Length: 611
Image (tube, rainbow, N blue to C red; front, side, top):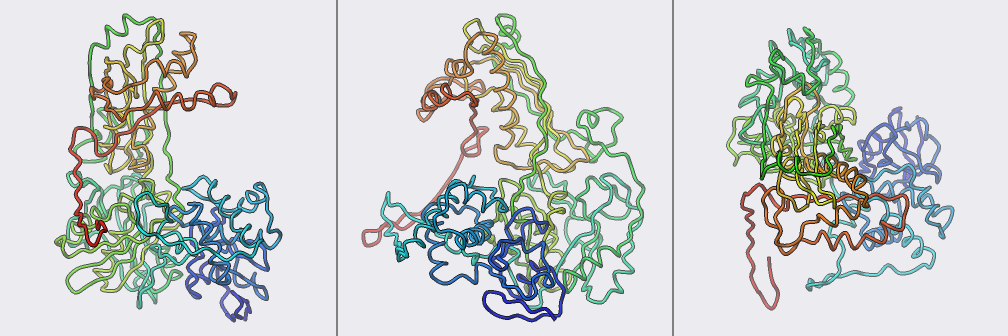
């Protein structure tokens, strides 16, 4: 029997259990967040006898006879202070990491209420934030310390709704105190837990799937394979490219390590883990295509029936060959940009609830309408039968636009007729989720003797991985922005997106522009060196201004302020040795010539505008 004092209350348990799971599942303390489960992120930070520890690295046995404090155990005054300070300083974005930050701050305040900036940073060394950059979090902790030190009454903040009035984020308080519900915080009576058995090889023929041992395991509610899908097995973020198989069937070939073969529903996480280990799969292992150039060769195996070319984009304007011929200086380089993981702190999670004539899915999502469409396609339902509700999203950055767990949760819940929660472990998230597209960019940039840009030629090869996701639009943005925000009119850009057996490339902040901008800006630095001017000067001389035409043919409007922006940082750039400079722009709205349509209804009632 382990005796633990949790938030001032003596708790007894016979179970030797991971402390994070015990606090969340048994005690319902949801302010303790499950970020990585590996002691890396600090989202599950708790105080043990006044010292901060990551709950995922502890067990009930290790904290026996000790005092454990979570955010739920703070006094009402402490909760008010932290909520006010973090709201006031604008320190809360996705909010998933903030309760862990609050715990670390509380641990610091037990030592001192006059912490220096360095002491605060040291106290937060075990807490990762993916959104804010920590500056406002440090300010919030300093403000909280000031209020505690002076014993001040926490100000009551009211928003009158006046234009120009400064106000707090509406969700800041409940995110700070861990009260806001993220996807894995959802609990429903009789809910079971879902999981997937995934391929052991990126490219392999699935000869046989044996689930007979799983069927015998007590606590397993049901098993779902490809043959159980009632609708279309292939889904996709873009409705016109539905090429992502929800499950791979016997006799089919896997495309990447994230491919699911079997879905299992079980009464507990422990039973689910054991059940997944009991599935036996017979493979014929095949050589994977892991290089985009290899995928384009004539004799390369086809990852999809239509071939390995997903999308091609060509952008030409002016006479590039003449521009290069007339140029004084020319730079040609080949650049490689890698896969990048979004690293949002909250792993993907969804809870699906079967209804009489449909399904409801509650999930951490950036794209509820796409999920509604894809789940309806998978289950063979009308859109009206599928309801998708977004919980708080613990970081996304583009990575939570694609399906990850939502369709699997919905399929299990619909087939087994019970609520199902489906959550990826951090390792599964790394394997399954989309990444920033790796690209190979061969770029030639030319200028005259004064550094005036004359032309640019580029070939961009994007690895879209096993499935399309947003590979086409991402490549398109990489091409349309490749020449940069400068005033010259001779470009020749060819972009190709290719299927491989690598992880899937999807939406990621910058959406392809980061890759091509990196190449453009690197070439500009070399040209500046050859001309004998500074990297600042070559950018200023070529900067686009209102009324000028971008290399892609677009006329810059009156809101264009690149020169003003450059001038704003000129002193900082020129008076610091360890500083670089680069310019980039990104489409506002949809771009590529499509109309952006927004609608809202306004009514004036008793002197107030209602939206």
